[in-house]
Image 1: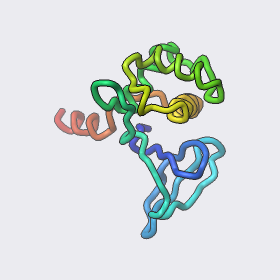
Image 2 (image 1 turned 135 degrees about the vertical axis):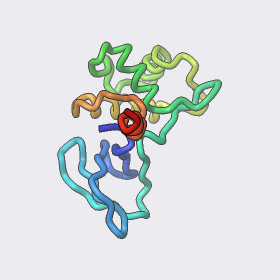
Image 3 (image 1 turned 45 degrees about the vertical axis):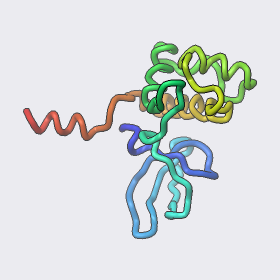
Image 4 (image 1 turned 120 degrees about the vertical axis):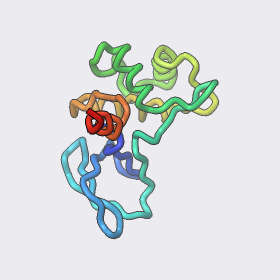
Length: 142
């Protein structure tokens, strides 16, 4: 599973896997407890593959940030929890992404990134490469 099927839903904790679309929205399943929820078009929903982190030069896709965390942690979970003090979170994030924009990336954003990475790791979703469409196109050409 790639990040294009993983959602963050405003007002709901954790991450969700997109299951199917309906006329009025879609059905998603929580990666935390497996419960299914129906989400309307009025909810604030973000697809993880569309999220980026501000750096001093550009916006870096979240998948690239996850790759850097995975590299730092040698494929394991993060060495700090998402509920650590602000200064510890910022130090950890600075180790991963030394050029992140400290004025536009808040401690709450860092908490989410760390929490999301650990949820994905628990669900064994650790392939942060480009979307499946790229690999499907290359297999059709063969």
